[in-house]
Amino acid sequence: MNRPIAGLVLLAYLCTPVSGYAAQPKIGATVDGGIFLYRQSVENYWDDWIAYPLMAKTKVPTSSQARATVTGEGKLNSFIGNLSINCENGKHFWESSAIGSEIFTTDNQADKIVPSPVIKNAIKLLCKAN
Image 1 (cartoon, rainbow, N blue to C red):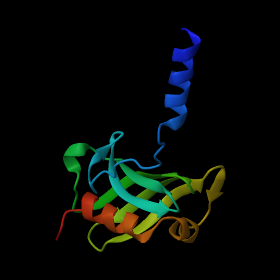
Image 2: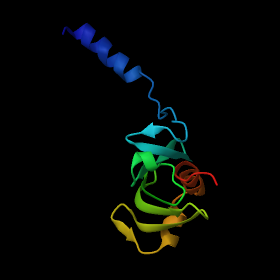
Image 3: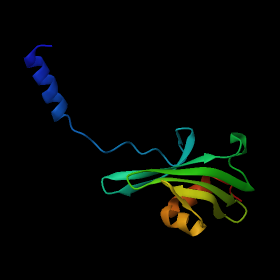
Image 4: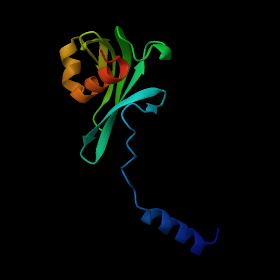
Protein backbone atom coordinates (compact mmCIF):
# COMPACT_ATOMS: atom_id res chain seq x y z
CA MET A 1 0.00 0.00 0.00
CA ASN A 2 1.47 3.40 -0.87
CA ARG A 3 1.95 6.00 1.87
CA PRO A 4 -0.88 8.44 0.97
CA ILE A 5 -3.47 5.65 0.97
CA ALA A 6 -2.08 4.10 4.15
CA GLY A 7 -2.26 7.55 5.78
CA LEU A 8 -5.89 7.98 4.71
CA VAL A 9 -6.81 4.52 6.01
CA LEU A 10 -5.18 5.32 9.36
CA LEU A 11 -6.90 8.72 9.51
CA ALA A 12 -10.29 7.14 8.72
CA TYR A 13 -9.72 4.53 11.43
CA LEU A 14 -8.72 7.11 14.02
CA CYS A 15 -11.66 9.40 13.18
CA THR A 16 -14.31 6.70 13.26
CA PRO A 17 -16.63 7.41 16.19
CA VAL A 18 -16.59 4.75 18.86
CA SER A 19 -19.83 3.98 20.58
CA GLY A 20 -20.15 2.22 23.91
CA TYR A 21 -23.75 1.45 23.07
CA ALA A 22 -25.17 -1.84 21.92
CA ALA A 23 -28.84 -2.29 21.19
CA GLN A 24 -30.66 -3.53 24.26
CA PRO A 25 -32.46 -6.83 23.72
CA LYS A 26 -36.10 -6.99 24.75
CA ILE A 27 -36.85 -8.55 28.12
CA GLY A 28 -37.44 -12.26 27.42
CA ALA A 29 -35.44 -12.29 24.16
CA THR A 30 -33.10 -15.20 23.50
CA VAL A 31 -29.51 -14.05 23.96
CA ASP A 32 -26.53 -16.41 23.75
CA GLY A 33 -28.84 -19.38 24.38
CA GLY A 34 -30.36 -17.78 27.49
CA ILE A 35 -33.26 -15.48 28.33
CA PHE A 36 -32.51 -11.75 28.61
CA LEU A 37 -33.65 -10.45 32.01
CA TYR A 38 -32.39 -6.89 32.45
CA ARG A 39 -29.83 -4.27 31.44
CA GLN A 40 -28.43 -2.32 34.38
CA SER A 41 -27.05 1.10 33.40
CA VAL A 42 -23.60 1.84 34.80
CA GLU A 43 -22.26 5.27 33.82
CA ASN A 44 -21.89 5.06 30.01
CA TYR A 45 -21.85 1.26 30.14
CA TRP A 46 -24.09 -1.53 31.42
CA ASP A 47 -24.36 -4.96 32.96
CA ASP A 48 -26.54 -7.46 31.09
CA TRP A 49 -28.36 -10.10 33.13
CA ILE A 50 -29.30 -13.39 31.43
CA ALA A 51 -30.96 -16.57 32.73
CA TYR A 52 -30.09 -20.03 31.43
CA PRO A 53 -32.94 -22.34 32.51
CA LEU A 54 -31.85 -25.60 34.15
CA MET A 55 -34.95 -27.44 32.94
CA ALA A 56 -36.27 -28.62 29.61
CA LYS A 57 -37.33 -25.75 27.32
CA THR A 58 -40.73 -27.42 26.98
CA LYS A 59 -41.22 -26.91 30.74
CA VAL A 60 -40.60 -23.14 30.62
CA PRO A 61 -42.60 -21.47 32.02
CA THR A 62 -43.45 -23.81 34.87
CA SER A 63 -46.00 -23.69 37.67
CA SER A 64 -43.84 -25.40 40.28
CA GLN A 65 -40.09 -24.94 40.85
CA ALA A 66 -38.02 -22.96 38.32
CA ARG A 67 -34.23 -23.22 38.30
CA ALA A 68 -31.77 -21.21 36.22
CA THR A 69 -28.17 -20.15 36.10
CA VAL A 70 -28.15 -16.34 36.11
CA THR A 71 -25.20 -14.36 34.79
CA GLY A 72 -24.46 -10.67 35.09
CA GLU A 73 -21.71 -9.42 32.79
CA GLY A 74 -20.52 -5.92 32.05
CA LYS A 75 -18.92 -2.84 33.58
CA LEU A 76 -19.34 -3.82 37.25
CA ASN A 77 -19.99 -7.51 37.34
CA SER A 78 -18.88 -10.95 36.47
CA PHE A 79 -21.66 -12.61 38.48
CA ILE A 80 -22.90 -16.18 38.19
CA GLY A 81 -25.46 -17.88 40.38
CA ASN A 82 -27.90 -20.76 40.42
CA LEU A 83 -31.35 -19.38 41.20
CA SER A 84 -34.28 -21.43 42.45
CA ILE A 85 -37.80 -19.95 42.40
CA ASN A 86 -40.89 -21.37 44.07
CA CYS A 87 -43.41 -20.40 41.39
CA GLU A 88 -46.37 -20.97 43.73
CA ASN A 89 -45.38 -18.11 46.03
CA GLY A 90 -42.70 -16.22 44.03
CA LYS A 91 -40.00 -16.69 46.67
CA HIS A 92 -36.47 -17.35 45.53
CA PHE A 93 -33.12 -18.46 46.91
CA TRP A 94 -29.63 -18.82 45.53
CA GLU A 95 -28.34 -22.41 45.48
CA SER A 96 -24.88 -20.99 44.80
CA SER A 97 -23.44 -17.69 43.62
CA ALA A 98 -20.18 -15.91 43.02
CA ILE A 99 -18.75 -12.72 41.63
CA GLY A 100 -15.38 -13.18 40.01
CA SER A 101 -13.48 -15.59 42.26
CA GLU A 102 -15.46 -14.63 45.42
CA ILE A 103 -17.95 -17.37 46.30
CA PHE A 104 -20.95 -16.16 48.30
CA THR A 105 -22.10 -18.19 51.27
CA THR A 106 -25.52 -16.60 51.86
CA ASP A 107 -28.52 -15.52 49.75
CA ASN A 108 -28.16 -12.06 51.24
CA GLN A 109 -24.79 -11.52 49.52
CA ALA A 110 -26.20 -12.34 46.08
CA ASP A 111 -29.35 -10.29 46.65
CA LYS A 112 -27.19 -7.23 47.39
CA ILE A 113 -25.49 -7.58 43.97
CA VAL A 114 -28.39 -8.68 41.76
CA PRO A 115 -30.80 -5.84 40.88
CA SER A 116 -34.42 -6.50 41.90
CA PRO A 117 -35.71 -6.30 38.28
CA VAL A 118 -33.57 -9.37 37.50
CA ILE A 119 -35.50 -11.45 40.04
CA LYS A 120 -38.88 -9.95 39.07
CA ASN A 121 -38.29 -10.66 35.38
CA ALA A 122 -36.98 -14.18 36.12
CA ILE A 123 -40.19 -14.95 38.02
CA LYS A 124 -42.33 -13.44 35.25
CA LEU A 125 -40.54 -15.36 32.48
CA LEU A 126 -39.81 -18.71 34.16
CA CYS A 127 -43.05 -19.15 36.12
CA LYS A 128 -46.58 -19.55 34.78
CA ALA A 129 -49.00 -16.88 35.95
CA ASN A 130 -51.43 -18.28 38.51
